Length: 343
Ligand code: DP6
Image (cartoon, rainbow, N blue to C red; front, side, top):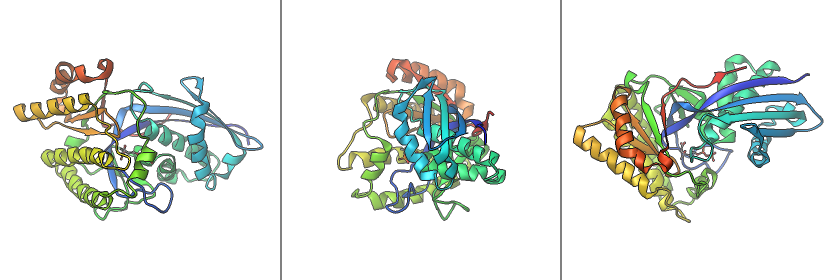
């Protein structure tokens, strides 16, 4: 078989109810269900070329530069999926990738990059007539999970749910499913990502997830996440912004509280993270805004607000929040429409 090609762009996502902790058994199965907004502007564009070879050989470029340091993560991913796609073990695989957001700004690229790569692999499997086109997205979500858990949610928009939960019909620990039945209010929600700290992550997600295994509050956390999933589902369906804000902020703070109480413990927020949160709360109190924030496992703040407030929220960012961003950097993002096939 000659060289096969595929090219996809796939977005990042921001969790509203967080995935933090893996099941002790199985590979990359979540300790609790999670749900995220799929973003529009923060994405990875990946092209792959697959040609026959004696054994597996992988080369990866980011922005045109060869990146051998990315290989261990990619090889682990290919090892995990090689049983399903045996041709990977007898292929020369060239991966050419770039992100629309600047690398090293503290924005996690694993969700967008692993979902883009998973889509390319599944697309090649379709070209090889080994996978039905109708099953492609679900399979891409399943294998994206094996690359990075949160990546499985990037396959679907406007929101995606991952992990078995009694309120989400068809939900699974193996792959994400789209969550579409939301109030129109949430279909074009905005997310301005305030880049507080671009430093290397102090704790990688993989290590962070492991810390929850023997965490003193672990069991309670999984219980609360399960309850929060039910609450956010009804808030999203009913357009209940007050309930939405409460769940989302509580989830962000709980994630950081878990990190502060792990062994070893971490404080990932910076002084400017708190300064931004305080400004958002002050403005919310003063002008009755339906604005809130969420956090990843880092110092950056995702400032979330309804699209109808876009102009006023953006001038608030410029006047009040930008000063707390490293080099004044922030990214204007919003809910998007999911991945796209480019070739
Ligand atoms: C805080 O998906 O990056 O962003 O499965 O080990 O690759 P791995 O972890 P990852 O964890 C994401 C954690 C989070 C919350 C979330 O996205 O749900």
